[in-house]
Length: 451
Figure 1 (spheres, rainbow, N blue to C red):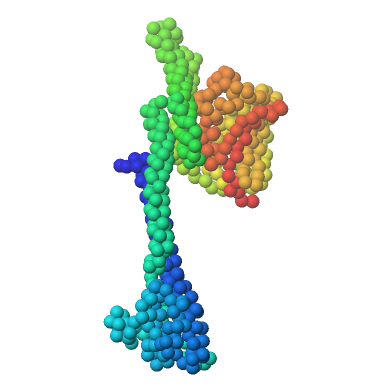
Figure 2: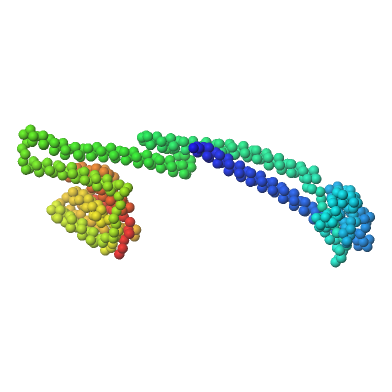
């Protein structure tokens, strides 16, 4: 498997060489096109120069002859020109090739049959008014026949060759430097992630200079922090589970041993106390199983539309008696609308929060459950008389976390964690806060509602 260095290096090199090759070909085509345009322009220039002279000779002499053409055209002739003048029947009158006069026989010997030459060259008509007085075939020798042109093309080729060599060298250096830098960054990132996968949790992921690499580095750092947090929570969870299970089991075991030794009597009050301890263990195990199921990726909700009034009525009926026994006022109110929830799970969620509120509300206090329909969310608020300690606010939904007052109440520390897991299943969010006189739990979940 190729390394990221080799892939980057050869990719940059191939791309640069491809661009360089295309540019070199374009320069070559441009030179060839310039040469062709030069030849065409030279021919048109000669035609524009010689045709008026030949027409003037015809007017002055009443016709065209070899002698009159020679005397008129010789001052304009150079060793680089081809000039063939024919009469109106295309018979040769004046044949000059690179400064040398030719006869028809010499011309045909060098160029081939006259008819083939006329067909190939397509001589230009020479007119005097509306009358054709002759034909002219004129051209210059090849572009490279001129020393200046040869030097120009040679200079261009040397420039292109030198530029290609320099550019190739710079491309190699740039590709090497860029690939080395990029490869060094990725190696550091891979090394850090590998160390993190093997258990290291103090890996440094520095800024790497590019947006995408920085995002990967930051994501790896966030993942490391999250793993550290989850591992810390897991250790704390295991300690809390061990403590919460060991305490009642130890108490039950001690009482059974004392009864076996005859130290304690086996009476109905004693058995009732043991049953209470067993119920605590059973509740904790059941809540742990329930939370594990809710947090499982395979968990799916069975959502359907439920009316807000019916939902609040269920909460009121469930807790009215207990609230009355504790002399706490329970108020459930909300708007008239339908919203999409898993009714069983959401009742479990809100019941846990209301149960928590009942546990922490003093006699004479109030618990209020409110259900509202916002623009994008359905908002459910449970507030009660009282106050949440500042140290507890950020940890209210941690597994097995219980503030001091909660521990006195004998809760399992999982009720609010279960509530949060249920809200998460509904793609919502939950938070705890304090107002001036009340503690408040606010639930938001998507407002797929129907009036």
